[in-house]
Image (cartoon, rainbow, N blue to C red; front, side, top):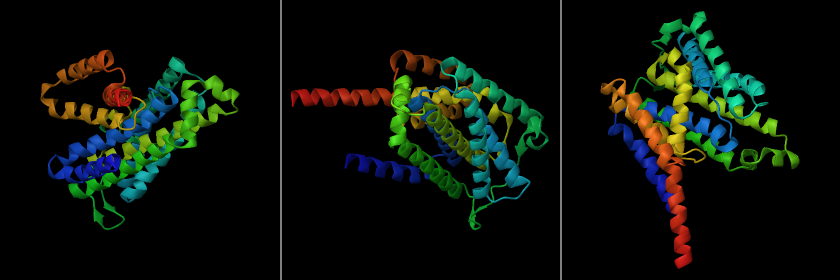
Length: 312
C-alpha cells in the first residue's frame, strides 16, 4: 500500500508540475532522466561502463530532426526513426565492444563515439557546427498540437514513463536476473550455460535504443539537433548523473539527472563556476555517498528495518 500510495503521489506531482515550474526545464530533466536510466541499465545491471552513449543520443537527435524537418514526418514517426537508428548504431557498437571488458570496453565505446562525432561534423545533412535548427514540432497523431508546451510536456512525460517501465520490467525479469549474474561473476554465468555475450549485446542495444528515444524527445523539445548531443562531454555527463543518483537503483538516475539539470539551469548565471560546483558535488558524493543519493537512502532504510526486526 505504501508503494502504491507513493506511485500515486509521484504521478499526481508529475502531472501538476508544469503549472508550478517552467515546462521546458521539466522536459529537459525528463529527457536526461530517461537517458541516465538507459545508461544505468548497462552500467548498474551489467557492469559495463560505456563512454560512448552520446553517440546514440546524438544519432537519434539528428535522424529525428532531419526526418521531421526535411522529410516531413509527424513527431511519433520521427521519434521512432531516431530510436531505430540509435538501436542500429548500438547493435554495431555492441558487436564490436562487448568482446572486451573494463577499461578496454570503455575506450572502444569512446573511440566509436568520436567517429560519430566527426561524421556529424562533416556530413551535409547534419548542418555541421550549426546543427539542424527550427525543427517543427508538428501534430501528434494528426490532431494534438505540440506547439503547446503543456501538451508537449505530457507527451514527453508519457515517453519517459514508457521508457522507465521498459527498464523496470527488464531488470525484474529472468533476463534481468541473468544480467545481474553476469555483473557479479561472468565466468560463473558462463559455467552455468549462459551465452553471456548475447545477453550483453541485447542489453547494449536496448540501452542504446532508449538513449536514442531520449535524444529524439530532446530534439522535439528544443527544436534543435547539434554537435553538443554527440560530444564526449555528454557521455561524461550521463555518467555523473548515474553515479550521483545511485548506480544500480531504479530511481537513482532520475534523481541524479534532475539534480544536474537543476544546477545547470538555476546556476547558469555563474558561468564556468557551474562545472566547478558539479565537480565539487561529485567529489563529496564519491567520498561520503559511495552508493549515490538513492543508494545511501535505501541502505539506511534497510539498516533501520534490520534494527527494528532485531529489537521487535
